[in-house]
View 1 (cartoon, rainbow, N blue to C red):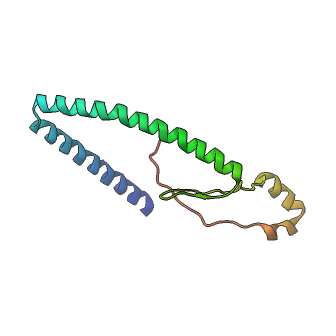
View 2: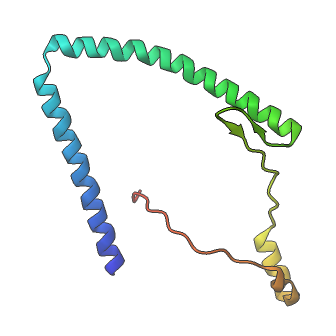
View 3: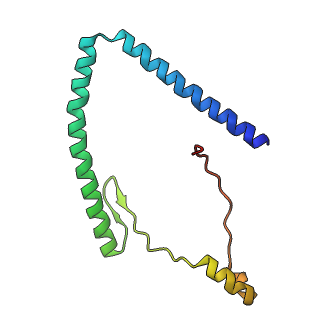
Length: 124
């Protein structure tokens, strides 16, 4: 029950921060003239187009790099970035092996269970 109370408090703090940011934006909007708002909108628009073009180039080049690194099968280092190669992970049919372990319990000595983890998400 204590965890539920803490989650509820965390939610309240997040809402408080959202409200604070809304108030800040409203106060900033109040001090800007219509002319300044329009100029800001024009600047935002011109940078948006440029940023979108660059983001598309970044995405395309990143995919090409990933494809090449997978092809060579090794990490490649540049001056400021590196493309780290990781071989494919092995996975097992946990449900199937669990059933197999009932009849063959000796397989359980090869089983490893990781530490539990928690992620905090919004309730849908």
